[in-house]
Image (tube, rainbow, N blue to C red):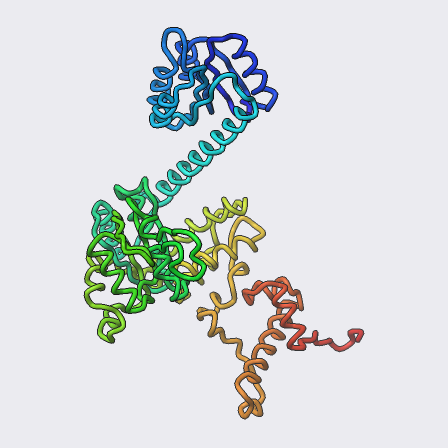
Length: 470
């Protein structure tokens, strides 16, 4: 099948039809021309068509009737009308019905090609967005999330029930426990799944921009506001708004957020005109919000508005029976991305991961598997592919290398002591790998470039054995 766009032409004037077909083929399109709508409709039902050019005035079934039948079969099909009529009212009517545009005879070929190009680009973008939406719905469907731990099974059952409601949801848990994933599942399993899920990480926004980002701003509201700007609440209308790190909001923004939740309307910065919004609100935090309420850092009334339904995600160290399933999920994910065929990981590697405390939770496990898969040379991930801190069963910042530091260091400054420790670790690791920098960097969990930089700046030199040339 050709990769070219397929354009269907319906034109009862034979000469005009031939000219249009010739022009289309000269531009690289596949073109098929019919003199009546009935035959064109039969062809349309059985073949792949990307765009239709149709004369408004046709014998038998006219162009408008043909257009309505096409839209019943494919609502996204771009249709361009061509006609000798000069009625502006008719043109407006067809555009309201969903026609892409309306061109009058005699046709200007440059104008025709311009409209065809724009129509195809627009419909391609729409199809890509729909395809992405379908992929997201598939990715975040419940069937893709099966857990062994009783705690996560209960949470998923709760999420299934929550998804069908419009109540506000507060997702709590340590960083990396999957709060973002739960928000996605709720949205894509809800009645709002065909509309946008708008995500905002409040911790990443400067305090001075949060209000405009959330509620929008009118032209001139602040320096740099050169045009009216809708906020995230407006952007999420009919869909879901996910506010991550909700505990980072200042008290003055909390007041405004509370008002929006209560009134279901936003007022842009610099305006006094409220705008109605229909959203489902999901928030998340890794903070203990109830403690923040006690400390007067978070409004109690806002907390109760947000915490209609609370989903508290346990850390990975408390549900280690889920680790093998998550590993399989991440191996499949990164196999597809990297074009690899890793089948599983060794028993020793799995045992090491099962004993590791995972301070970074699921996000850390995902990073470890990604790193291991990229470095792996065979079809199985082994302990050699895991970072040294996993094998030591410590968090990355607390790996013990049994470093022997001269007692005189005790009176030196902390930076000097740390430098000496770092140098000793590098020397021991390089020596253990016979100064093979790739293997040493892999064990340390850093890039080769970073290792070379450290070797140079710390003055690490290869220790010569007796008899070696110097």
